[in-house]
Structures are given as structure tokens and as C-alpha cells.
Image (cartoon, rainbow, N blue to C red; front, side, top):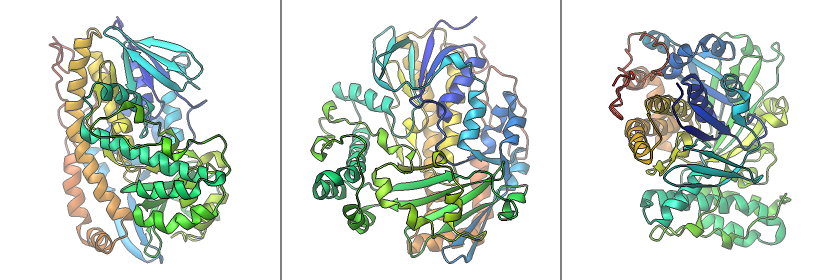
Length: 527
């Protein structure tokens, strides 16, 4: 019998659709809301690691996943002058876990997962603008003035989450928002200021906007330009004939950029350009911003309205949306457009021959996007009847390791298991469930973020010390360090407790499924 509660999920990204798919299998009532009119085509390659393969096997989707993905055995690193640095070997994953790592496009993977969800339970073009909750229910309101009622609200709406913004308003009003989260929100507000700087150039606000943007510069942020080509001529792009995915990453030395590409099924190539931003980058690019013209599609707020969030008072009136910083069409008029110019990227050399412009020319406009990314581990994951998962509570740089995608899927598995054991959605039960979820996931995600930073420095760091570290690691320590990391990360392969269990494979044995003794019920559903 279905549990007597309904779950509302905001965001049809990897975390949201995985959770919806699992709730459907567990016969738990839910509705999924997405602001786009369909599953977003924006994004590029997704590396699907062995830690989530048992889940796809449980779901009976492993073979279909292999059809839309290519195995990846090696990541090649190259300097800007095309001089080879070395390789990072992933071939051991098969021996260690019994599964290859796979590369697919984000869109193809989402389409596979969405195909497992009843269409009437997914609501597209539903941008959530507010929600209210009491001890008995939560009600969301969308931009089209429709409302929906449920017992739980899950914010799975990405790195610049609207649900997180609304939730933190409520928490800040009560004076209980942790300082770390208040500082993170202040950084988001600063990022919006930067994003709006380019849009303000055409109405006389250039000097004020760029000055404020420079003063509020993102620390350690990245700007990305990504795309997925249409089917290419295999005679011209011979790497497409290789059975395994060809991944080659170029690290700039004279340029503040790194760029990479993966081959995927359908004779396509996923490519990306990354630029690390900070005070120096923004100063160097300020002249380009001021000299350019970016026609605004809609009136933009003046910088004065994008005031900082006071970390002492956490005044909720100072919150502002950061939705404009997520994946956007390439021609959007954000700071990403002004700092990362396509014409400049077109000249970048590719290890397989040719230039990045060749891939850009072969990329449909709806398959090319930009985004600003930051890395933050938030402390506040839940309050009342609302819980955040995925990038909404632990956002990671979208580098070649793709840990953000993996962790969003793992979040969904653990949360679905907890909901499966939930007898009722009373306020007291939800507090216990949410605390258990964060206690389980927080240490794991924290370790993954630290590892992701190291990977980011190896794959794209451009300081002298990072260059030295990269060469030393790739040439001498890759196998030793990777074996150490794999023994810790590959063992954690969570599965759905309400689906047939998949036996552990490989020489790195899967950790026993953690028992969540919530409400007197263990991980196997026994009282």
C-alpha cells in the first residue's frame, strides 16, 4: 500500500528525475516541477562512474545506459602548445568494481531517466516563485499562479537554487541562518551583480556596474562554455571510430583557459571551455566589458538593488534570485557572455587536430550554453517540510570528474530509501528523516568536494605550483594516488533497498548498505 503522503520535487535535473523515478518504483506519491518547457538540452558530457552502476542494474536500465554512452578508459592531458603531459588511467574501474565508467550527454541521460516517470507526474513550464509550509502541509505557487499541495518539498533545482533562496529567506527571518550560509548567499548576490553588469552597459550604467562587479568579484569561480555537436563526418573526425570515449583536456599556459572534449555515441563530440575568474581576470576583462554592447532583453535592476546580505542580521529583504547564473543559451547577455567570448575560443587548438571553432560550427545553437559556477558546501540542508539535495546544498565545479552529477544521483538513492521507511509525514518524523539524510551524506560529500578541488587543480590549474603538481602527479603518482582514492570512493555504491539487490563485484568490495534506523525500521524495512 502506498504511504499516506505526497512529495513535491522542484527541478528535473539528475537529482530530481532520479528521485522521481525511484519514488515511482517505491509506489510513493510525488509530482515533479520543471521551469523549462521540456527536459533542458543545455549542458555537455556526463561521466557516469561505477558507484551508481548497481542502481542502473537494479532498475533494469544498465543495457540502455550502455547504448547511449561510451566507456572511458583514459583521460589525456595536453599543454596549450599541444605537448603531451600524460594520461589518467580509468581502465582499472572494470577490475575494481565490475563496471566501466561511461560518458554520455547530459540530455541523453536525462531523457532515459524521464522515460521511466509517468508523464502526468511531470509538470513542465512551472517556475516556482514561492512556497508556504505549516505543521501539516507545504504549498508551492508557480509563476502562472497555479498552486500545488504536498507533504514534503524537495529542492533539486541546481547550483543557484530558487528553493534554497526561498528557504533561506524563511530561516533568516527566524535569525537561525548559519554565518557560513549567509556568506555564501552574499556571494550569490555579488554574482548576480556581476551578471547584471553586462546587461547594464547599454543604459549608461557601465561604470557603476563594473565597479561594483569588481568589488564583489567571485572568489574561485569558473565560467564555462559547453556544447554537443551534431553527428560528424567520421572520415574527418577519426577519433569517433574508437570504441571507447576519447577524452583530451588542454591546459592553458599563456591563456587563462582550459578546454576539453569527449566523444559520445551518435558520432558526436561534447566539448567545454573553462575560465577561472577572480580579481585579476575581471580587471583584465573590464575593458572588453565596457567596450561591448549587450542589448538587454528585459529591464535589469540597478546595482543598488543588489545589495549585500548582512551576515550579522541576515535581513531577508536582501535576498535576490541567482537563477540567471545557471546554464543559459550561448547568446545570453550575462557576464559569461562578456568574459568568455566565442570568437576567442574558436582559435584554440585541439589535440586531435583542427580548432575548437570546428566543433562550435558543428554545434546546434540549442546545444551550446554558458554558466558561472561556484563550489559551496552549505550547512543548512533542511527546515520545516523542505529539504535540499544535489547542487542545491553541495554544488561542485563541473570539471571532468563530474562528481556533482554522481553525488546528486547518490543523494536521490539514500533519500528514496528513507522515504520508503517513512510511516507518515508528521513534522516530527520529517525532522528525524532530514537529519538522518544530512548525517549520512554530509561527510561523504565533503570528502568528494575536497577531492574534486584536487582534480580541478590537476586538470585546469594554471599557477606555477599547479603546473608542477599536475606533471608530477600524471607522470609519477597517478596510479598510486588513484588507487588510494578509488579504494575509498568506489566502495560506496548505494542501492535502493526496495529493489532486488545486486551483488558486489570487483576487487574493491562495496560497503554494506548503511542501516538507517529511523522510526524503528532498519535498512531492509524490518521493524
